[in-house]
Every structure is written in structure tokens, then in C-alpha cells.
Length: 331
Image (tube, rainbow, N blue to C red; front, top):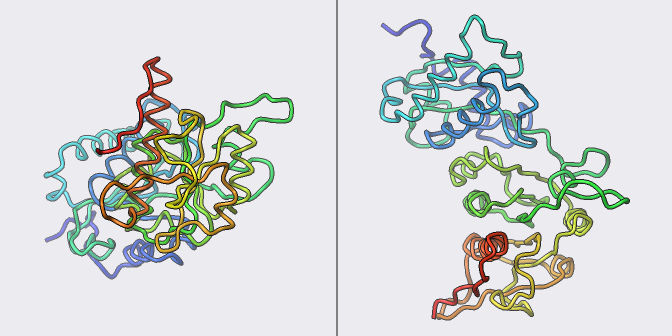
């Protein structure tokens, strides 16, 4: 007989509401998204613990990052992931501590569920035994006070004061493949980027396939969607970033960039069509990646990796005081 505290009915209203998050309409309506599987759930729990354990408080919460709303797990399946189990035990201790001073907004719903329920909630063919529901951060790309684009890029005021500019930002212009978008988010995270900004027409960054492809990076760096390309470029220049466009027909070759260590916004275009002429014109320089073999072009996620890491390694070399080397050519 199933423990009455275990969710066991795959047709329950709660289960249907979670399952609806696999759709764009469901995410828009509830302002929530799915983080399914041990890796993203691990990062969601780690972020929650760093912000709220021992009463750290909301002031420690990173701007633009998602927060936990609910977490469901299959105890038997979770036994295969002791690192996630350990984090969950820590969180449970905070949630159920009678002396806890956790505010209401920090608390999330935690419940064991059967494998059948988790399968009904999730978007994958085979449930991995743990699923988090997270709140989509309130970041929008419009103009005005508190604009997240200004905040993330470090735009200074008219007097020249204010935060330091972001060192590296990825701008995704009408990228439509969820796998590519998730991979670029993961790469931007690994390269130490400050943010990923998506323009209208791009895949929803909170879609399940994007979240799976990003492998937990949604909980490491801010994402802002729906930003007009001109608005993004204007904010980048105001913050002191150079604007580089990754373009196979670019006039500059990546290994020959004049100042690769400068704060940079990389513009990355659509999988099939690349950057439009209008979007190419927004950049200071159009940059090509040399091809030494017979392939006609690079996948956009691969090109993004090469470009973001060229900037990241040049910045690391400058910060460490070492002599910057040229970007490897593969010859």
C-alpha cells in the first residue's frame, strides 16, 4: 500500500499542472518551468541552499536566476544519486526545522512521488527519478528603469559612474533549435559569461529540451529573452562592450582580432540563415572562424563555443599577466 504522503495519482490536478509546463502556454501562464533529472535539480538545490541556508536571506539571491517552487522525487531512484540526496536532506532540514526563520518566498513544496507520477509530470521518455519546478525570473528586455539588460551589461550613467561592464555576453538572434540554445547557454556559463540574451524569434530558454541541454547552467547565469537586437547593441556599447558578429563571411578572422580581451558582446545568428544583413550591420566587426578542412560551415553552437572561448581565454591571459597566445588554428 502506498504511503498517503506519496503522490501516487498520475491524473491528479497537481500532476496535470506540472505536466503543462512542457508547453510554452503552460510556462507563460504559470511563470514556472521544469528542471528534470539529477543534474539540473542538483544545481537548483545548491543555489537554494547557498541563498537560504543559515538565514542568508534574499539579499544573497543572484539577480535573474530561477528559484525553487516545488520538488518531486522517487526515493528509490534518488538512491542512485547520493550527491543530490545529500543536498535534498540539507534542504529538508532547513524547511522542517521548527527554529527556521525561512521567509515564505523561500519555501518550496517537497513531496515524494511514484515513478508513474514522475513520468506523467515530466517531458522525457524515461523518468530520471527527480524533478524540480522553478520560478522563471522576472527579467524582461524592455526599456526603462530597472531594465535587466542595463543591469546585466553594467551600463554606466551619464556621469560615467556605475558598475563595471560585463566581460562577456552571448547574444542569440533568432536561434530556433532548443538543443543549440541550451548548448550555448552551457558554453557561455563554462566560458564565464555574465549573461545570455535572446531576441524575439529565438527558442524559449525555459523549454524542457533547452534546460536539459544546458545541464544545470540555468542556475548559474542570468538569461533575458525578448530583447530587441538594436536595444541590446545600444546597451552593450553604452556599457563599454565591443560588439562582434560571428559570420562566415566576416572581414576579420578570429585569430587576428585586434583586441580579443576587451569586454565583448558576441552576436550569434539563426541556424539556417545566420545573421541577417541588418543584424550584421549592428556589429563593430564581423568575425569569421577559419575552416581548414572541407566542411562548408560550423554548427552555430560549435561556432559559439569557439568565439566565446577565444574571448574568455584572451581575458584570462590578460588578467593573469601571461602573454596572450593566438587562437589555435588546428594546423
